[in-house]
View 1 (spheres, rainbow, N blue to C red):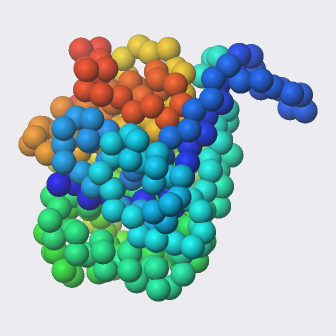
View 2: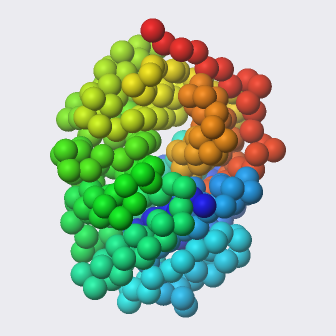
Length: 321
């Protein structure tokens, strides 16, 4: 069973626009959807659709609309009650695939709830083959909470592989705390990789888009040297790079008509973990990650792909020297 923690879940509301977004004007979307979202929840959703056992842990009251949406999607979950409602993230998608997101702050997690989450994660981790901690941190939680929680879980379960997918201050704090506790796997994009090592993430992404992956590889190697075994860097339409102590691999995505990029990175992480669970080699793990992320970007809103929707045949991986 793969356990996911989403400390700041969200109701993902997506509005598909029939024309490009123009500021200051009234828009009427052609379609609207609301689904249970948040990085770890999306990972569990993708794993469940692939018949890979998973459980999503998140803070939410049982009467919150978010919980009803989670049940409706058939996502296995364990909810820890909080007094405030789950946030709403609003996404606007344009016909050319451009995605604009407005994310809510999230419910405040007080010290008592934080302790309950920590105790529950540690208990459930004893039944897990992987722990995934993903997403932004809610109000009331310190920026280094992922590092603290990782250290606690590792004390109780020393051999448990842990993946982390986060950004901004939480990512910077994770990088600062690698000497205390380092995850097994991280899945940053170029911007988040820059936040982790203190580099210009936009420059890394721009260079990669032009075919120069040296900056991404160098930054990822720094992370590996500091204790993280596997660095999966997703680069949108450019593809993805995987860096481990054993080598470097680059994957180009299959062709796709982009509808929404929301959930694509989460789907990539799920695909990677599915391949890892089957003991696939690094190239195959990277291929499945990119195929999953690409399939998600070709679906509307926060729609999570099934294995039947993957295009592995046109996902190409090569080993970089």
